[in-house]
Image (cartoon, rainbow, N blue to C red; front, top):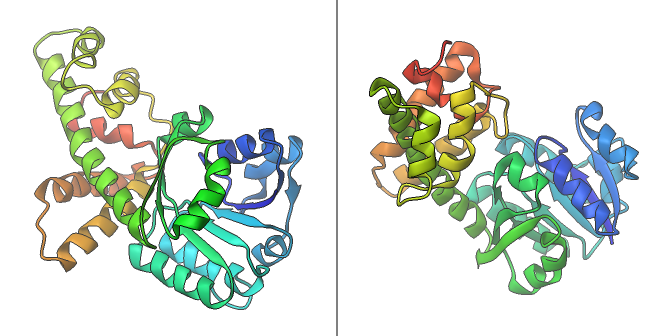
Length: 289
């Protein structure tokens, strides 16, 4: 298929690579052209604008930073909705607002296009190893059509319901991670204060009931002081704010989410927004700041 991809960041680059390795034609656009160099060397073609990319693609994946970026790419005279050919499938992998996903789907339907909101989880590791979890909102027929593409970079792909359902499911994912990351940090700092070897502690607790993706993949990085981003703090803050906004709209109180959000915001104010989410441990003075 002819596939367009907008946003070749930490995860997008690996996803694009898997699509190329699956035998598909890939055209790319990203604001920072340097981030697309690896894909271009592997055979992808460069497009100068989303407008240009939309003219020559059957499926377009987008994976950008914030809801404002999604709006800019999809709407307006130069956006995907105005320039994609009839029948094109638009797939937003960005973690964004459920209501925005619904707006895109409605606008796409009116123009003879199809749209899926399909945020992912698994970070840079999941993207590299093609085992991402994809949470999809949209029409079942379109979902089934794109399953072969999703399977090139994901191991867990589930249609959650109509437009916006994928984004709501991702909020559930992020709420869980927000609370879990606090637990991971607190257990490590407790181990250190107790005079234990944190790495040895991990060997015990990752195999038991406390086991989690964050404990297995991010706790070792916390111990090593490796804060390179698999997922940026600044983007996690964006996600948590969306979850807070949605929960407050329903009158739902989520104290664990708000606590985690507040600590991450403190780190961002201290200049850590471009670090990986595992840098939460810095709040607990586990390692030197």
